[in-house]
Length: 91
Image 1: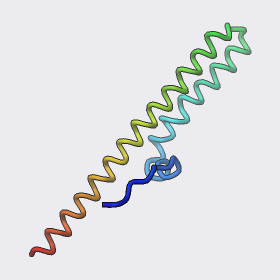
Image 2 (image 1 turned 120 degrees about the vertical axis):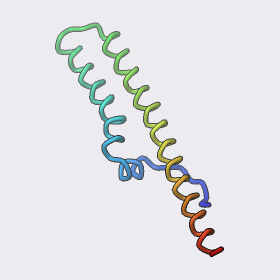
Image 3 (image 1 turned 180 degrees about the vertical axis):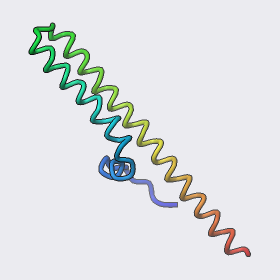
């Protein structure tokens, strides 16, 4: 097994670009859009900032779950590869 090291977001974006973009950039885009909409239309800053904070928190949590899922999938592939190579050695 490999030595555990932190997963970088660049590696995660390279491995799964569509999912990573939807989970990270989508909520952040909504947050910026709501802040701009609130400013232009005179909506209470409390509502706009609250929504933006929730969207940023969602992006952080969603990316954490996505990174954990990716690490688990990578670990399972690594274990399956070791299992296959050990099976080949016994034949």
